[in-house]
Amino acid sequence: MAQLLVIYEEPGFVVVVKASGFLSVPGRGPENLDCVSERVKARYPGCIEQPAVHRLDMDTSGLLVVARTKEAHRNLSIQFQEGKVDKSYIAILDGQLEGEAGSIELPFRLDLDNRPQQIYDPVHGKVGITHWKKLLVKDGKTRIEFTPVTGRTHQLRVHAASEHGLGIPIVGDPLYGTGTGPGLLKLHACYLSFAHPRTGDRLQFNSKPPF
Image 1 (cartoon, helix red, strand yellow):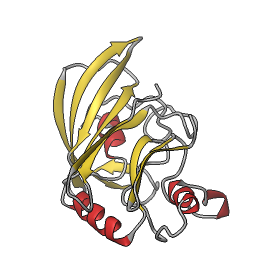
Image 2 (cartoon, rainbow, N blue to C red; image 1 turned 90 degrees about the horizontal axis):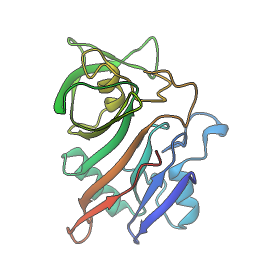
Image 3 (cartoon, rainbow, N blue to C red; image 1 turned 90 degrees about the vertical axis):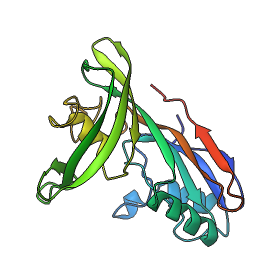
């Protein structure tokens, strides 16, 4: 899978599929400059300096919408802030999950002593909400669909791995599971739907997981 695949483009924005192990925005240091935002800016002259509207973890693959103009960036950002963007993810859990479907409401926060890890904290944490549906159990692992209601850092990874959530980490997760490096996480943003920034028409995009 290429690091970045453009699947839809308009003068105001593009929709891309990012590979696992590839950054959404620049990281610290020149070695971490290559990312979705920089690739889009290089491909589309005149693109705004900060085109990212939302992010996927470096280890998460899947759909991203990236703005090319200030107007589109403002409109799309508001849609994300107001919860008007629909997203769903496919993941493979490193074990067999009981139950068929449910919802997780779990408070968590950044572990200040172990960044960027997030930890369960019922006192100081902010609640993340995720709906889930079991799709298949095969070879001792569970394919699952996640539909996040909130969009917090590492939300799906924490909700899967935490004993207060599903209690089974996602396959290949180097922070919350047994992953040994980048590019191995089996978590893919497979569906993205939002209103066209100019016309208001509802747009829907799908991406098949590479696993």
